[in-house]
Amino acid sequence: MSYRTNRREPDAPSAARRASHVSRREPVAARRPQSTRDARTYSRTKTASSGRKRIALALGAVCLLGCAGLAIGLSSLGFFEKNATPPSPASSSAPTFDTEISDSLTPEAQAGSGNAASSGQPGVNDPQIVMNLNGSQHTLVKQGQPYIESGCHAVDRKEGNLAKTLEIAGTVDTSTPGTYEITYHASNKKGGQHTKVRTVEVLASSDFVPNTKGVPVLMYHYVYTDTDQPSKLTSNYIKDTMLESQLAYLAEQDYYYPSYKELYAYVKGEIDLPERSIILTFDDARPNFLKYGIPLLEKYQIPATSFLIADEDKAKRNVKKYASEYISFQSHSYGMHKPGGTIGHGGLISAMSQDDIVADLKKAQPIVQNEEAFAYPFGDYTDTAVAAVRQTNILCSFTTEHGRVEKGDDLALLPRVRINGDMGLDGFIYSVS
View 1 (cartoon, rainbow, N blue to C red):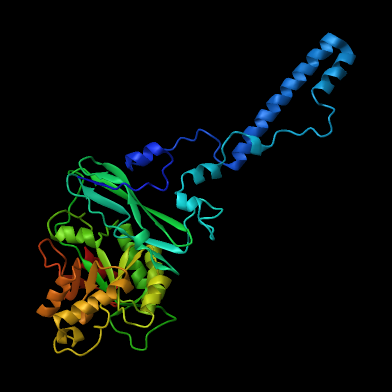
View 2 (cartoon, one colour):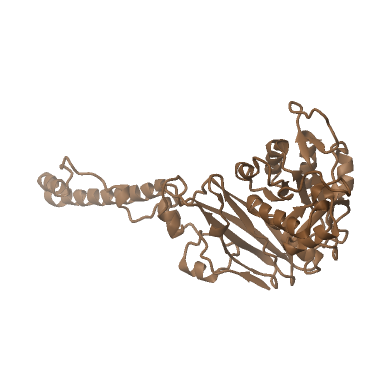
């Protein structure tokens, strides 16, 4: 099975590569000067060679014509001209580094305006645009099974969601083990460009170790530090140093982070996931997590989900302000994270009609800018709530009930593994191993 799109790759150096859409990694031969400095050296070498030829001609004139002939010969060659200058590097036919890079840009990038990424610095990603790949950047696929295109989210810190500009290119042939690439490209209204690349490795069945014990979806809440502690410390708070030790462990053990699309396909029995698969989620998107948690995820390059309460005052702003290539904002409802119900923790959702719940979920989606996952507020749900979740076509919905996600589970009622702030590293390792 293969995944293919017809979009032009922004970094394709030739028309032949653009037509093929094959994204295996290929070495690029350096056949020409690779920088402006190389071009100058190349030009000076030609100038020096020309000068030696002139001297040889002059010496020949000495032998044949004597001193008078020498003077005439040197004059004819321009040795006495005060304004004579060597050829300029700019006139050399050798291409410069900038020329080669600009040739590989999209027409929009070459014609862009107003920022460093699109004007004067070809090939530079615009820092105002943030792109986060869903799931692991290095995606693993078992030979013969379908490749699940997990997608990529793009946001401009000022303009907001750039989903409509997102273009994808690449082919993955899952019948053939090897390494492939999928390229994602986004642009903003000012012509700024940004590109991300996903590496897809198709493993032979004999080399792929599948997950057989279920996928732990970790549930965190808040993060605190020595200098910023809550007035009331509960098990929902984890100290930044403890969170860092847990992330370091996951990185050292080379865990795999499936996207929600991959998890959906896994639950449906369509694919296997690698043995050490895990998903990290942080509920409520409180400022302490945004401020202290996201930098740690970025440090260890571990993707995670922030379940956002969309009706909070700064929710829309925070999606842009705290945009990160390792954070996916997903829905924790629009206005249902409040009391008013009669079951469980007393969440409002248990007192709402199906139509009202559907309306709430749809209202949250454009703010969080995703619709792949949902976490029930307070973990409360009813049959009516589950029906509403299914009606909105959310891929994966999570409760607070303990357990790992296994094949055949109800995608509208997936369990999670709570990570308490006081459990320690050994307890964490036990929970995920």
